Image 1 (tube, rainbow, N blue to C red):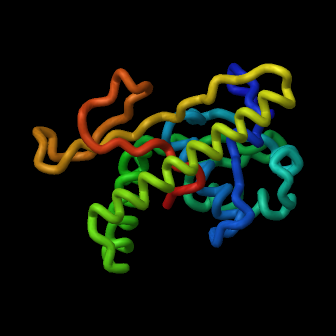
Image 2 (cartoon, rainbow, N blue to C red):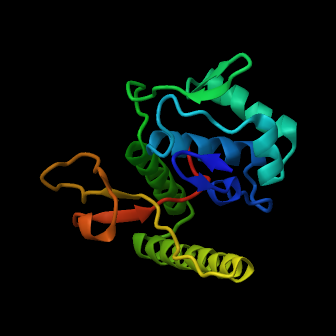
Length: 197
């Protein structure tokens, strides 16, 4: 369990895809980076123990240890002997924000799809189909969890990263909207778990 004023099962925070070509340790690291830069984990928050997280997300202890070492080398966390791992203040770290990271990933995705010969319309259709499939999978998972826990939970919405259309008044990278009512017009992409730098 992760406790930050509320108790959240680590399995809900760290959904790992064993069928992915991305190694498990990198999926876990990318998820931690997202949770840190998006503000879920705040500077000074204590992270789960290596042993505890490994047991909860059902991965090898050495895998989680490798993730923590890598996060510390990259400046996202600080380890304190006999106290644990704590989130570092990354607010002044260049290029560290959920919006910047998501836009970089989006631009790279578009570039690679175009290299495959796909038109922007083809890319839009492919992305939309993938997003619909991911939401359906999430909803099925939530329904299964609701059936096993006896009560149906309302699916939690992630923080939505909003990108203004190019050529708009701001011409820069958008902020984040906490719910659908706060979204400005423009291209919006829901948080993609496991993606990151």
